[in-house]
Length: 188
Image (cartoon, rainbow, N blue to C red; front, side, top):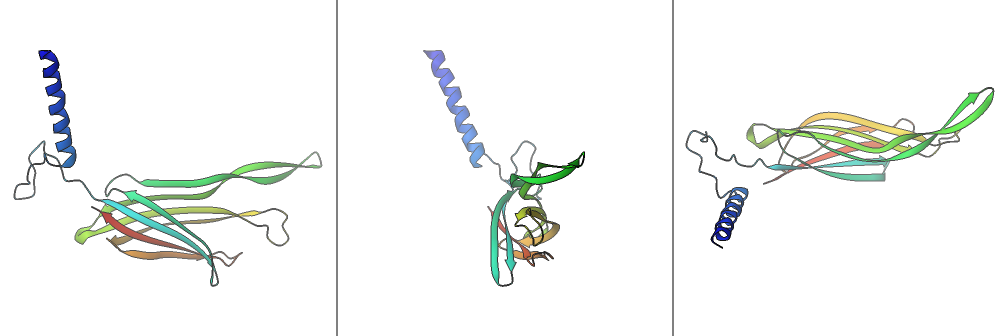
């Protein structure tokens, strides 16, 4: 019985210590000069909420508005998102003078990759790459559908609450305008 109480006391003190560390109550105050003694916890970096909205318009008509939210840790690794489907693309080949039809599967969808690093004055350098592909209806004179692709990568600087439309491109076959809007919010 005495041994059971000792084990219970050790478990309870371990749980309390872990909860103090996870809530930050076990952190020692930072001494003047900015350096911390060895073995003390560093303050948690903020989490960045990066909202990317892909818009597609044709003239005044909005065709698509696709929002994506990515959570990023400054100076951390990249955050990625992939949303796609495999679509059969018809392929016709000629074999011994005869047409042979088959299908090749292609990923159609959105791939994003984002990284962030802090700058002076509360700004963040955001590195963003976007790759979007979609299946379109057959064009005049074609019996099968076609795919359209949009790829962009850039580096932008934003502060908390900042937003920018950093890219716009027009598809020469459809006249569709693709826009990318990026908003940064710091989650403390």
